[in-house]
Length: 492
Image (cartoon, rainbow, N blue to C red; front, side):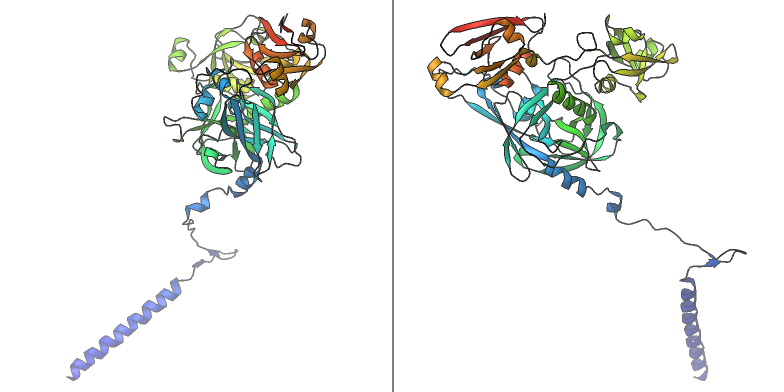
C-alpha cells in the first residue's frame, strides 16, 4: 500500500512539474525574440500578416460617385413621329427601339404625333454646356433637361456630330456642378471606372466596373466618316445611360457612354464609351466653329496581322500598314509612302487603324504632328501638316452658317392662314447663300431638298445630309401667300 502511495505521489509531482514547465516555456516564447548584434541596437524578428478582408484592396469610389451624380442630367426628347422614319441611325434604334416607317399622313393643321425618348448628359462647365450622344437628341423638336436637384430646363442644340455620336446642348443656368475632363489615354486595362446615368428612367444611377479593352471598333456609327475607338468596360449600362458619364476613380470625365453589346437590348456584360480624347475635341469644335474640324492624314490603312507581316516581310507584328496614300493628302506631302508601317503619332504607339484614327482625331486641319513609320526595317519620322476634307488646311464652316440668316418659329395663326403644316421664318439676313439667292426677310421655308423643316435643327440635319457640290432646293411661302423656291450651292 505504501508503495502504491509513493508511486502515485511521484506521478503527481511529475505531472505538476510538467504543467509548470509548459507554462514557463509558453510565457518565455510568447515574447518576440531579440538577437544581440554587437555595436547595434537589438533587432526584433517579426512577421507580416496580410489583411484578411479583400475590401482593403478596392479603391474608394464614393467621392467620385458623389461628384458625378450632381453633374449628370436626365434628358428627355420629343420627336415628331414622321421624323422617326427620316434618318437611319442604328444607335437610336438600339437604345429606344424601332421608330416606325414614318409614313403616317397628316392633313393641314392636324396636331402632329410625337414619340418620346430619354437619355443622359454631362454638365461640362458651370454655364450650362452639356455633352451627350448625338443619337439621344437627333431629330428632337424639344429637349428637356432635368438636373439632379429636379430643376427642369429646355435645352438648345449647339451642334452635333454623327461621326463620333457626340452632341453639345446648352441650358440657361449658372453656377452648375460639372465634371472636369480627364485623360482617357491614361486609362489602363483593369482600372476601376464608374458609369453614371439614368437607365430605364431611374435617375442618378451609379454602376462600377473595370476597363475591359480600349480602341474598340463595333461598326455602329451613322456618319459618313465614322470614328470609332471605344473604351470597353463591364460597368452595367442600359437604355437611358446613353450620353452619361464614364468617370475614373478621381471623379474625372474619361468617356461618354454610348452603346452596349447585347442580344436582348439590356446589359449583358459589355458596354462602350466614346473616349474623352475624342469627345473633348469634338465639343470644343462645336462651341467654336459650329461643326467638327476633321483632320485627315490621307492614307488607306490595314491592320498588321500575321498573314500581312509574312506577305510583306514586315518582321515584327506592330503598327498600321499604309495600303495607299491619297494624291492630295497630308501623308504624301510629308513623304510617307504606301508600304510604310505607321507605329506612332507624336510618340503615342498605334497598333490598330482605330488607334491611329483616335490619335489623328485629336487634331484640326493645319496642325502639325510627328508620324513615326517603319520602312524596310528602319524607323523614320515625318512632320505632317494635317488637312481637311477639301484637301487644304483651312477651317471648314458648318453648312448652316453659310446661309447667313436668323430664323424664328411661325405661329399657329400663320399656319392656318397659309394652309401649311410647318415651316420656319427668315427674320434677319446677312451676307450668305440665302441673300445671294434672292431670299427676302419674312420668307417662310417649308422644305429643303423636299424634306419638311420647322426648326433650325431640321435645317442643319437636311444640310448635313446634302452634298456640298449639289444644288440645294429651298421652297416656301411669303406672308402674303406667294409661293416660290430658290436654288443655290453650298460650295461654288
